[in-house]
Length: 374
Image (cartoon, rainbow, N blue to C red; front, top):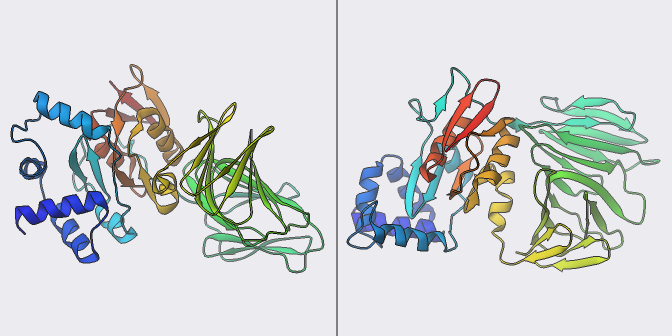
């Protein structure tokens, strides 16, 4: 493969324009390339001739690029499992492969942390709790004529002969995620440290559920019975659509992001209708954000972290939930930003080794403590 071909593939990757054949060639090459070779290659591309890592010209060009919207393509699952990630940092492409030797992140003894997995706790109407982490397929419970069924790692409700309705809650502890099908056929994905409360059969004029944490919805259409999600300080009303809700207690605001259809975010007497690609940022009032990177918002559902242009605190909150770790800042919060995507199937040390390219260092200690170093 010539240098010009490699440069062309890099540019097509950043623009999300790789064909399937080009994608295979690109990843076959990058799994073997070294950072030195990559830097030399980039010097031949769109960087100034006087490109040097510490030169004022390079720093100016880097700053300009950081202010531009980054284009990071979501990889096919088969490639994420094989290659882990491509991180775009400060105008260069940094490669992270599954570690075949100890990484540079400081890990105390055997303190590395495995990634989260599928699992949750189901709380039935009578208060009984059922762990869903490794439950076999079959009927979990019957409540007022509704069968609760585990099937292929997902929970389903069969309410054809329901004589009434009771309320269930599914909660995901840290380091767990889960998917369920509601009695109306709507699909829900729960991120780590989240919960949803819902009836075992929708019998009223509305289909109402309550969410804390983060959830992605694909709502079954039923214009005669609107679907509503009650959050800690707002309500989202829908007819049939795909959207993501982020309502963690430790986030600065509630965020409702629309991918398909239409939703209405309501807080008090204020209501805002969203179009696809918009996000309602709900705090004391509702602020609508345009042209949201929806791939980034739902990356967690697709098995990746998308850290493109995110600050340290937001990234650390995501890692804390997925790896069930305590975050400690040794000397304040670094102002660095991260760029790119990385698989959620990696050990913590592997993820941190990729994040080091942004100039932030870490130490993993016993008792699942992550120290963010200056």
